Image 1 (cartoon, rainbow, N blue to C red):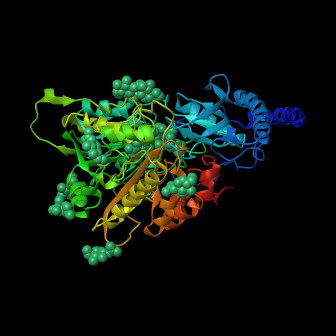
Image 2: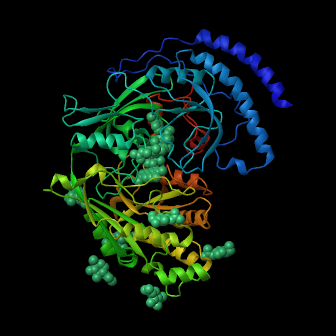
Image 3: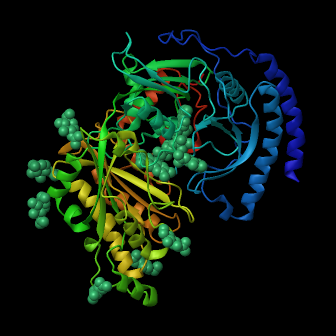
Length: 593
Ligand SMILES: Cc1cc2nc3c(=O)[nH]c(=O)nc-3n(C[C@H](O)[C@H](O)[C@H](O)COP(=O)(O)OP(=O)(O)OC[C@H]3O[C@@H](n4cnc5c(N)ncnc54)[C@H](O)[C@@H]3O)c2cc1C
Ligand SMILES: *[C@@H]1O[C@H](CO)[C@@H](O)[C@H](O)[C@H]1NC(C)=O
Ligand SMILES: *[C@@H]1O[C@H](CO)[C@@H](O)[C@H](O)[C@H]1NC(C)=O
Ligand SMILES: *[C@@H]1O[C@H](CO)[C@@H](O)[C@H](O)[C@H]1NC(C)=O
Ligand SMILES: *[C@@H]1O[C@H](CO)[C@@H](O)[C@H](O)[C@H]1NC(C)=O
Ligand SMILES: *[C@@H]1O[C@H](CO)[C@@H](O)[C@H](O)[C@H]1NC(C)=O
Ligand SMILES: *[C@@H]1O[C@H](CO)[C@@H](O)[C@H](O)[C@H]1NC(C)=O
Ligand SMILES: *[C@@H]1O[C@H](CO)[C@@H](O)[C@H](O)[C@H]1NC(C)=O
C-alpha cells in the first residue's frame, strides 16, 4: 500500500537530510544578551523559508470532530501518522540527548470540541530547550505553537503533524517563576514578573500574599498567564481592560531562537500587538505586569427580575457603570415554580404565561470597601455547582431553574481581596459545554448592548415556547474597558457613534450540539454585523460561515498594523508560529527570505 512505499522513500531522503542538518545545526544554544534590547538586526539572518514538508499535502485543516467523517479520513490520518513516525526519529536525533522528550500525541482541548489526531508534543523546562526545538522545527519545515492549559475553544492550536510546545514547565534562568519587582530607575511603580506558564490561581495567591492586585478578572483561575495575554482575556469591570493591557514588559523567543526583551515605554507600537498576540509573536517566556496595592472588596449576590434590568436602559446603565465589577447571569426558564416544573416533567408543557422577562437574573456586584475586620476576608470564590455554572446535575430545560437555585443559595454578602473576588468555574460535571462570545461597543444610551442581549433572550424564548428546548444554557454579559490594542475585541479604534469607551461581551454557553446553538450564533453575528460585532478570539466562532470576512472588516487597519509590528521586529518572518486557521485571517508574511 501507499504508506509503506512512502515510508521507505522517506527514510532514505530523511537520512540524507539528517546528515545535512547535523552539519548545519549550531549545537550550542546561547542566551542572547537580554539587556541589549535595542539591538538592531542589521545582518541578514538565516531564516528558513517555510517550504512544504513531507506532511503538508496530506494534513487536514485544524478541524473539529474529525472522527465523524468518512473512512477516507481514517486512511488519510493514518498516513500522516506513519510519516510522523519517521519524522519523529529524526527529530529526536536532532534534538539530541539533552533535549526534551518529544512525543506523538492525540490532542483534545478543554471543551472537547477541538480534536487533533496527531501532533508532536513537547514540554521544555529551559530556555535552551525552547531554542533547540525552534531551530529543529525550522530546519524540518514544521510549525510550532505554544499552549498553556488548552482552555481556548477556537483553532489556536498547531495543525495536525506540527509541534505543540507546552510552556507550563518552563523555569526562569535568572529568577523565580513569580517575582515582585520594586520600583526602579526604569519604572517608578511596582510590578510582578511571571513566567507565562504560571496559572492565574498561583499568581493570584502571590498577589494576595504580597498585598498587590491587577484589574482584569476572568471567571476562571486555571488559565495560564501566557494564554490570557495572547487572547486578551477580560473580566467584568467598567474600568478594567483586558489582561494583556496590564503588561509592561515581555521576553520571548523568536523564530530564530533568540531571546528578545521588549518594554512598553520603548516599544509602544509593538505592545499594541503583543497584548493580544494569538501566539503569533514567538514563545513568550515571561511577562511583567503593573500592579497596584491590594483592594478589599465586598461581593453582593442579588436575584432580580430580568425585565427590570435588560429592558430598562437607565437601570442597566446605572448598574454596569457604578460598580467596580458587575456580573450578570441568565439561565433560561428559571421562573417556573415547583408545580409548573412538575407539570413540565409530566407533560412537556411550557406554562402559558411564562416569558423570559419574568425570569430572574443573578446579579453579582463587586465594590471596594475600607475598614473591614480581616477575619471576614475569604479566599477564592468557587461556585457551588461542583462543575459547570449552568445547571449543576440537572439536564434539559429545567437546568436553568436548578442553576438559579444554586445562585440563591449563596451568601448575600462576602468579602475578599480583589483577585479572589470572582466567581470561579470548574469543568462541567456532565458532558461538555462550549462558549460563544461576541463584543459590541457600548453606546451612551445602552441601545446596542441591550438590543444584542434582547436578541439572544427573545430567540431563546421563541425556541423554548415552540420546541421545548433552549439554544443557550447561560447568558453572561460582561463589561470591558476598551484599549488601543490592535486586535483586542474591546477596542478603542472601533468607533461606532456615541461610544462610552467600553465594550459589552455577550457570552453564551451550551453543549456544542444543543439544538439551536449554532443557529443562534450565526443569526446573531449577521444581525449585528452593522454594529461591528466581533468575536472573543478564544471562544467558539469559526463554525460561522463568513466569519473571517467579518473579522477582517471589523479590525481593518488594525490587522495590517498587527502584522506590520511582527514584520518590523523580525519576530517570525517565515510564519513558523502560524497555523492554517490564522493564515486564513492574517495571510502570509511578506518578508520571508
Ligand atoms: C471555564 C472557562 C472560563 C473562562 N472565562 C473567561 C473569562 O471570564 N474571560 C475571558 O476573557 N476568557 C475566559 N475564558 C477563556 C480563556 O481565558 C482563554 O481561552 C485563555 O487563553 C486560556 O488560557 P490557556 O492557558 O488555556 O491558553 P491556551 O488555550 O492553551 O492558549 C491560548 C493561546 O495563547 C497562546 N499562548 C499560550 N501561552 C503562550 C506563550 N507562552 N507564548 C505565546 N503564546 C502563548 C497559544 O498559542 C494560544 O494561541 C475561559 C475559558 C474557560 C474554559
Ligand atoms: C485546575 O485544573 C486541574 C485539572 O486540569 C484540577 O486538577 C485542579 O484542581 C484545578 N485547580 C484549580 C485551582 O482550579
Ligand atoms: C427604570 O430604571 C430607573 C432607574 O432605576 C427607574 O427610575 C425607572 O422607574 C425604571 N423604569 C421602569 C419602567 O421601571
Ligand atoms: C472609573 O474610573 C473613573 C476615573 O478614574 C472614576 O471616576 C470612576 O468612579 C470609576 N468607576 C468605577 C465603576 O470604578
Ligand atoms: C405556580 O404557578 C401557577 C401559575 O402558573 C399558580 O397557579 C400556582 O399557584 C403556583 N404554585 C405554587 C406552588 O406557587
Ligand atoms: C444533584 O445535586 C444536588 C445538590 O447539588 C444533590 O442533592 C442531588 O442528590 C444530586 N442528584 C444527583 C442525581 O446526583
Ligand atoms: C422548532 O423546531 C423545528 C423543527 O426542528 C424548526 O424547524 C423550527 O425552526 C424550530 N423553531 C424554533 C423557534 O427554533
Ligand atoms: C447618540 O446620542 C444622541 C444623544 O444622546 C442621541 O440623540 C442619538 O440618537 C444617539 N445616536 C445613536 C445612533 O444611538
